Length: 149
Image (cartoon, rainbow, N blue to C red; front, side):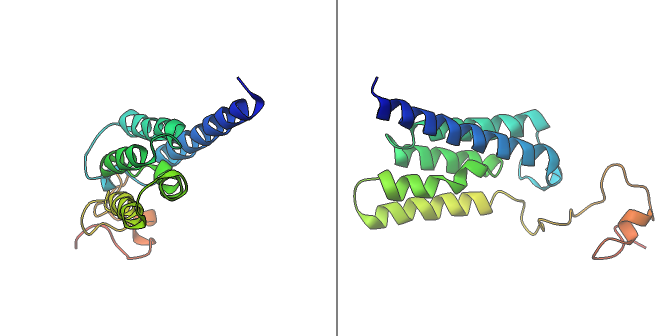
């Protein structure tokens, strides 16, 4: 195995590990899981992030397959590896430019559309499970009171 091949593999692994760590960390510490379209335990969302990041290992050989697979995973949980998929398609994807941009649009739509309809990324439509009626955290939050009067 030549030196450039080892460097290429090392870069691929590093990119995948960083994407998996970032996605999993944000999934565990980020927004409430009630905002996802499909209700699932935290480990399922972390597994989705790891699967999407693992797809990045072959982004140079199969950029279209990687991008569309990450888009499919992003429908379940917004995969942060989707931020790297457009580069793989435009830099390593052959064929016509319109096909590359169509795949980029599909990835973006899947990533942005993974939230439930009408749900804000900063405010859940219902109070957190640890909240009690009229607690100070809910009443002082932007947007006012969570509980109906």
